[in-house]
Image (tube, rainbow, N blue to C red):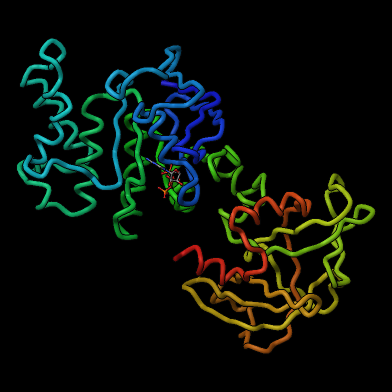
Length: 377
Ligand code: ATP
């Protein structure tokens, strides 16, 4: 079932939660709605489900205008973050619920319901647990029961709101892989909400990045990662370093440094911000005249990576670089060491555009480490 969303508006009192959303979702697609808290992801998901009356715009399921239809009429399967299983019912009865409460005319007979529930138990790998009650299941098992329950009604669309939010990191990872293969098997159009970029990039075919009730970018996981179209998307997906610079006669001059980098040639002249991710900076030798010189002020080993905080001599800004570790070519960096780096890859945004990202709570004066810490809290 393909879905077409046009000009969707939603207010809560005076708060404008969705500001004219346009989105096309292809049949069988696995789509992530990604964004920070309060960006409108859940509101959009609920609007697609029919749980949220709209103030404007249209939601179409295939050729049908679904805008005025109820959840039941839209035939969506919905899974919430808190599994919301019926505590007093067994796993079997929880899964059968959607079918057994159908009006008599539409209700399958008992044998058909039993068969369907058995198939679903196998699909979600919970065969043998049908007589258990929710309290006797782990978090991951409960979430799979919730998915099986949503699938029981053979939904036209499967909607998942932070489906793995309450689970620990390892279980989340396992369930992600499992959901991906489940999606391959069932082929249902599936939309899930997450604020976890890794989850979106690992699981989805396409990602919708939302910010303050608007869509910042829609694209495949490669597109949004490799070519973020706005500073906000860049920042949200990968905590980049942001370096003030100028484009002058086709050359990029980093502020306060003599470093000159070639540009693609299409950039407008004037002040820009250079966005470059910590893993896109390379350590270079003294002979590289386009290098940025600095001093190591922080070293931190995390698993296979070595993170260095580098204070640039030219501007005093602290940037972060990531190096593979252990790496025989990587010297044992110590605080106080002199270092020269150069971005191997970067994007430019005119300063005026970057200011819009700053307005939405993004503070370029913070170091990447500080921003990462802040986003964790
Ligand atoms: P989160 O990741 O925190 O769930 P979200 O991106 O899903 O965030 P929404 O739940 O869609 O965000 O909420 C968008 C905005 O609308 C938020 O600022 C929220 O406070 C507001 N909002 C949501 N539901 C209501 C409501 N029923 N009444 C008033 N305001 C609401």
